[in-house]
Amino acid sequence: GGGEREWPQVIYINGPSSSGKTTLRKGLQNRLKPKVTYLSTGIDILLREILPEHCFLANDALRDLTKQDTDWFYWEPTSINDSHSSHPTSVTLRCGPKGRKAWLGLVECTLGLVRAGNHVIVDDVCFEGEWQLEAWKSRFELEGVRVVMVGLHCHIDSLVKRERERGDRKMGSAMVQASRVHGLGKDLNKVYDIVIDTRNTTPEDAVAQVVEVCLKKMISRAKTSP
Image (tube, rainbow, N blue to C red; front, side):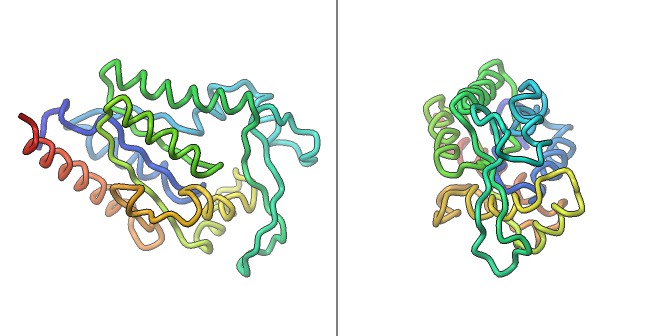
């Protein structure tokens, strides 16, 4: 149900690396294609496409982390207090002062796509935690964007296994992100419209659950609209 214009302008997906965000995003785009076309943006597009190589990819390729350019996006060693970890230390993605400007620009680019009349799925990792999540939420609210907020989480064992199988991510980064991306100690049900555990949910079911939330929001909005 619902015409194209009634669908949420943004479906925002946040979760640690290897939690299934991109699979969910592509599944939603395919499932909703007959009704509404969603463009996509997010952290990978910023890090791997928008930024020149020296801003992240060069740092990502370095074995010696002390040689990174910390003005931009870089890996910071961090210790993990976790019995699951085979690494006593891991890494977490950080953004320096120039990186922060680029990251805030990603938020504004997304709003620009929406203002131009597009629907957008944001495939994101709030790798520095709460301030990034709040930046997205406050901008959506200020602009009056109709948004469905989706939080993904996944058991540490599954994240580590997927990270190892992928082979294109810094080992241990998913584990650190798992505790950080949603803001430490937050009640996720207050932050998101829907929270999905991707270890216990098939990709098809995850898509169906998000679509159901979108439809419920559309119905409640139709009831309250004059």
